[in-house]
Amino acid sequence: MSGAGRRTVIRAEQLVKAYGEFRAVDGISFEVPAGESFGLLGPNGAGKSTTMRMIGGVTQRTGGKLEIMGLDPERQGPEVRAHLGVVPQQDNLDEELRVRDNLIVYGRYFGLPMGYLRQRADELLAFAQLEDKAGAKVDSLSGGMKRRLTIARSLVNEPKILLLDEPTTGLDPQARHVLWDRLFRLKEQGVTLVLTTHYMDEAEQLCDRLIVVDKGRIMAEGSPAALIREHSSREVLEVRFGAERNAAVAGQLEGVGDRVEALPDRVLVYAADGERALELIRARGLHPLTSLVRRASLEDVFLRLTGRSLID
Ligand SMILES: Nc1ncnc2c1ncn2[C@@H]1O[C@H](COP(=O)(O)OP(=O)(O)OP(=O)(O)O)[C@@H](O)[C@H]1O
Ligand SMILES: [Mg+2]
Image (cartoon, rainbow, N blue to C red; front, top):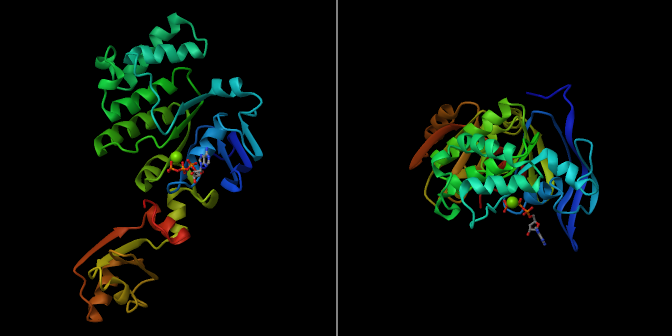
């Protein structure tokens, strides 16, 4: 979905956050239309959380403009927060309170009435598949359950925009899929999602459009498919010749694909047809220990743009 013609709900223009001389966010501009699922993809320290905190109005920006539903999060913090649901990178649930009470107490901060909150808490427990944990202590929950509770809590005020900072980091694959499913449902209901991740598969699954961020700057912007088309070949052949030989062999692979990238543990050959590239390599008398053809991913886009891997 391009979001063309839809109202812009977040507008960032030359956003800067400096800590002394160091610019954690160094002139970032983007717009998010209503209902879009927008991602910030980047490695550790890229400035993703800092950007999210500026949107949420909990960190003051050093420079640039920022508008959330036409409001400035610094000057109109409470109005902005009324529209936002916030899922921080670290769960900050109240461990003293039981699961359901976490939802109710959080809702009280927004001044929501008890009658409404009791009903909303039950709806959200069902949504987060935590109904049977309603009376449990928070510290007895698994990591995935805590994450689902944090997301449920962020929805107490029926936000139009949900900010999710690394929603599934540290969760096992099954817990991640449960969470993705919940986020899809919110998107179907028209909630605008802004999420950060350093998982390329998460970005590919959830984001209509994303910015690739590195060292506080935007390296590229587009839909996952468009970014892959623009910055990579269709397929990637991964070949391993052994740690000692990878770099040397990579030098002999000129012309077998569009581009060759030597990593410490393997050589990546970018080509429209990976199997064909493998045939060409064998025809040169080179025999990899292992080979694998896969479709190009956002990881390849990131490698191309920065020369580094997303997860270090
Ligand atoms: N309060 C602070 N004081 C000084 N430097 C900070 C502060 N907060 C963040 N930084 C620095 O700003 C940079 C960006 O941090 P940020 O947390 O935004 O990165 P991130 O993209 O969210 O990374 P991660 O994937 O590890 O969560 C980092 O180099 C970090 O050390
Ligand atoms: Mg972060």
